[in-house]
Length: 596
Image (cartoon, rainbow, N blue to C red; front, top):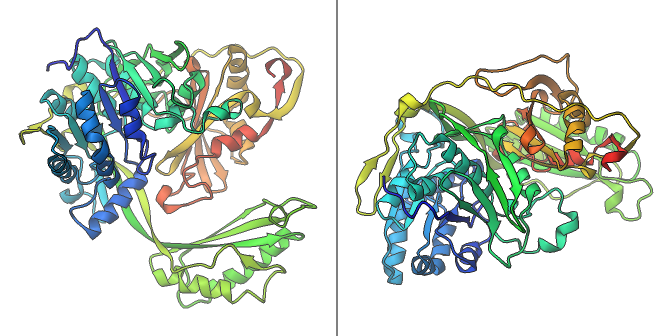
């Protein structure tokens, strides 16, 4: 394999999209804002694959992110002129179709450009997953490497891992082998920081309050990746936002689980990551260790789960609980006796009301009713009829935020695993050659458990003050299918000594109102040290697992099953657990005054 550039020069690789629907002008901003070797775009998520699957049902020629084409229309010439290669997973379910569309666009614009694509991830036609709308394996970056090695200037892929958009170009640029685990692991970590765009430059940052003036228009991030796998996260000069230890730490914790971050290229050890402030808006990532990738590939499955509908009742003033109980009893009875009663009924009361409120809005609580069924009539006519008929026969002040409609289809996400050798990984080169990407099965083997991390001594006792956890801790949370993660971090060694001994699994579930039976210890093969406890929360019996990451002064909590069947099913008020960390930060604890 030949490298794409001199090994002494770092690879400057940027990001212009964190999701399908991100800032449209980001591609142009990144191409004109400074020097870049490669510009990546992450357009895919679990929900996106469902959306693209429904697009493909309507038109088999679709199934890719059409926004990417519109961005290229004004940016392809810029990229070619500046020598910046573009690598994006915007191909979704139809990377070959998108590659053809890019060629047609280039021809129409009179631009000579070499286009390649990566395919093989789509397993829907194999018959292994009956009933699925989409079935896509998460491929690594080797196919991207092969395309770039063949001279491609634009590479579009289907469902590769988000980090593969960085590992592929890095392996091409430096000529890394598939067994260069430490180098690849460093690129995976850098890719994980870049993949969500401006979340690395201050967006969604829990410690934003003192820097909010810089976040009107945050710039997108880039990484300077070195031959040894270390990297510096930064952004173009003069752009908004900021890059600091906290923004990088939070993004590292986002949507991760144990100390092992496993992917098809390598298993990155998050417990080895070290961060150093390398100057203004520059954070150096170094020390990352890598291990062999797992012997299987994850497959994301989306299927249509049925139909859902909802109605939100507004409860104002006094007797909120009694009003909620009355309308719930009335609706439950009406739905139960309906000819097409919905199969699943769920209620949530949000106490947004305040006593002696000076506005009607702040005097009101919201009672949310969600119904699901395979039959659209059961969530449409049955719900709307029952709700409308109560208008003059229920609690005082009865009204709803909007009348229920006909009901809409919802999706369900599941994860499956298949042997790596059973998934074709094909690079379709600019000249049309189809090159199979080899699988080194001898390098994929089960890993030994991670050793218990060395934890510091507890902070000495002293005076405390009862204040929100967020005064000393940052957090970021998100979804992984039906599970949620909450990463919590602090800035100082003293705060870490307090946090690691205070925020136990028991305290975590106490703060988030999760009650549990007696704790049990649980460790699976190859998992990092953790305390796993089945809990009884708002969603039923769940499992909470804590993973300490001392180098980052961070704890990562996994809550299994909190999100039900995934974001598309909209199982709870916050269907992607985006604000779970902020709720945790708002909870009050007795915190040592020395830390405040």
